[in-house]
Amino acid sequence: MAFQAMELDPRSIVIASVLNASLLGAVSIGFARLAGSDRIIGAWGRAALVLAVGLSAISLQGVAPDWISVLAANVAIVAALVMAMRALRVFIGSVPREVLGWSLIALLALCLVAFTELQPSRVGRDVSVSAAVVIVAARAAYLLRRRAPAHCRRSCRFTEWIFWGVVALTLGRVAGIVLTPAGETGVLEVDPLNALTFLLYGAFTTAATLGIMWMEIESLQAELVRSARYDSLTGLYNRGTFLEEFEREVSRCVRGAPAFSLAMFDLDRFKRMNDEFGHPFGDRVLKAFAEVLRAGIRKHDTVGRYGGEEFALLMPNTGKDTAMRVAERLRRDLEARGITVDGKRIDVTVSGGVSAFGEEGEDWDALLSAADRALYEAKNAGRNRIVSAGKPGTT
Image (cartoon, rainbow, N blue to C red; front, side, top):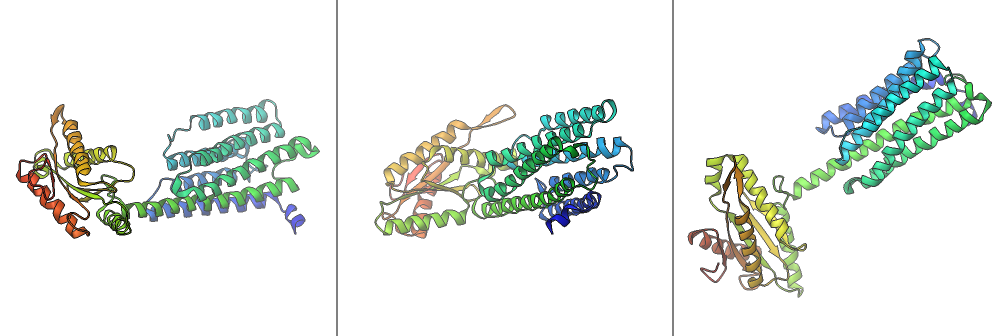
């Protein structure tokens, strides 16, 4: 069966590859629109359609002029790879510019003109195209190895090895072209090397598309998980996730771990700032305080946006006195930061209340109620202060 496959007409295989690339491109673009995400799969689909155009031109060798079936065809194929490389860069959050890729295409076009018009050589053309394919595919594989996002490493590794497969296949084809007497055989002439090459390239196109879809699906799944656990504006835990962490900490304390403290914060006069400066300013304030919280807490502390302009901070292995010092430092950090609007500094402050496990209770309702009472005492006392539960007037 393997030897029969080698006797297939390469032109027929190329036409089948055109249909395959066209279908994969259309499905990829359709998937991107349905998923509402065009970071990579839609761009990959457009690259597949360009690949289909290049392969269509390849299939016209011996029928159409060389500038179509050789020059335009191979430039389109390498351009499709460069477009795929750019899509990968966008996916991993890198700069999407492909200066090297487009420069490589320009150099390839010059080589093809030279080996078609000035000094005709099929070997020269094939080696030039193969070198361009190897460079782009190897760069794509290396990019996936070096910069694969943590949430989709398996799919990135799968796709990486597909690109390495393209590199190996292309290098093998170059060796076959250079080292065998059939080096001057046209790519569409019946030849085992031609048939095997196009069959494997078609398989790699399908496998790479499946890898890209896998990457996109894993990324979308990670986004769903993130949206379920984190506040979209501040990037902090949302209320549900924070409560899960609270219950986990209660369980640790029940088993004998040191007690923890809870701090509740509420931005002062937030509604008035929204009314006076607009909701975009309010969003900036929320983000600014979230940054202050992230920068000012320990790695094992837990912070979340409890709702609106209210934030919660869970401090394991921390007594109330230490928690008060931490909350006070965070208050001062926000006060010192301020927000600038039209060149004018706007002071932003926060009030807070602190309660401790065991002193004010041992469940969420008890600790929250105690911290909230202290928080409202801070508001009633003039705002911009921290009050300890059970110690009215503490700042």
